[in-house]
Image 1 (cartoon, rainbow, N blue to C red):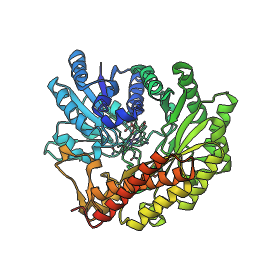
Image 2 (cartoon, rainbow, N blue to C red):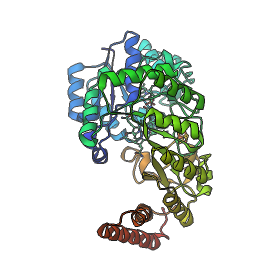
Image 3 (cartoon, rainbow, N blue to C red):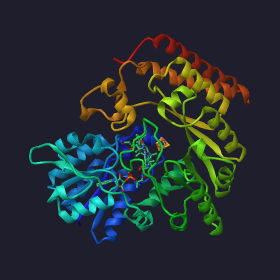
Image 4 (cartoon, rainbow, N blue to C red):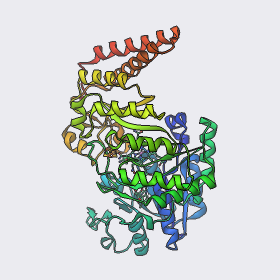
Length: 459
Ligand code: B12
Ligand code: SF4
């Protein structure tokens, strides 16, 4: 075996994700595995999702890999630091990839990583295996520690121009049936994921572009349809998730994909994410015909001022109009809402709550903004970023910004927003007195908490 690929997304250790129970495999690792195998390398994949850290240690003992490649995002960082230590204990060299490590290269290298792949992984990882960790300066797309102990950043690796040349993700390397059955057991529907494109050219300031920069490359509609056909035939899911950043980003591509699926009689219910400006009557009609049952919109805020500060390039009115359009066509709307962005004040939070009442999405999820290193948002507030503990003990999700409302305030604000929107819905729907009373009480507590804490600032 030439390389063991692994990630640190252990469901057993993540109470929140266990509650949600909507696991999907890490497609990036499976792309790497497929690519390397097609080039003749021996690859083994440790899929952490349904396993434990002890299982990883056992896998290391059993397989004794000389090279381990780990996928890292900001949430899996702590597990990855443990895994790094375990890899060194069996004498393996470790290369890291994914959206997080290049932003904290000095830290990960100081914690024992031997190299970090910046961006798209296929070509750089192969090059590293060819070089066997020797002559590292000649491998584009790599970061490592030079002889003087300083981080060396090589020239960037050009992106793969034709994504059709890549094999499908190596789902044979993992137990995908288990994902499908976990979904079915918890939600009545088995689900699988696939991705049609890489990269997003928009510029939302808090969004991480660490892997694909602002490039956008698509597979051909036929190539994606081939994968979908294989997935439906082989794993028999009840639904599909397109993991694309913005599924309908390219109108012509999308309509052609819809046409190809129709011609091939491929239809599966699916969920996806898009933006209001990438939806119109024809696109929404095609989505409905293809089987889209829920579309997620990054609505983020009901305040145009905040949307503009985020550089979302969307209009509140357009979010509302496209929500109506989607619902008219029988597609549920989910919204992502972000509280706590730079310069947000009470009136913006109120505008967001009113926007949610007016748009009436089928569901919405809230996050309190956190500055991911490497994003324009992080750069903008870098002199005010506060971390509650040292790098090893906090992820970017724990970062906050000096001067903004306190965590306590946002916890009350979230409670108020979620419950006032629910109250509005319940009041205008079939009323259940007990439920109404509970929602009202939560709305009042949330609002009172906001008023009580509105002078508290992060310091
Ligand atoms: C699907 C997805 C999810 C799924 C994850 C399913 C799964 N198990 O993977 C769900 C919905 C669960 C999810 C959750 C979250 N996600 Co998410 N997610 C994505 C998304 C949209 C697609 C990932 C994907 O499949 N990409 C396609 C593959 C081909 O690309 P890739 O994974 O980057 O892999 C390539 C390279 O990174 C590299 N590579 C990858 N692994 C390795 C390993 C080695 C050894 C090497 C050398 C190279 C390498 O090579 C690969 C092929 O070229 C990305 C955005 C994006 N477009 O990538 C965000 C993204 C990864 N998510 C992000 C975030 C912030 C989160 C959450 C923290 C959100 C939240 N607030 O809860 C959680 C974290 C959950 C967790 N515990 O890990 C951020 C990560 C930022 C960061 N710096 O870490 C991203 C980049 C979104 C963004 N633009 O900000 N997410
Ligand atoms: S938030 Fe979505 S639309 Fe905005 S840059 Fe990121 S992926 Fe693109």
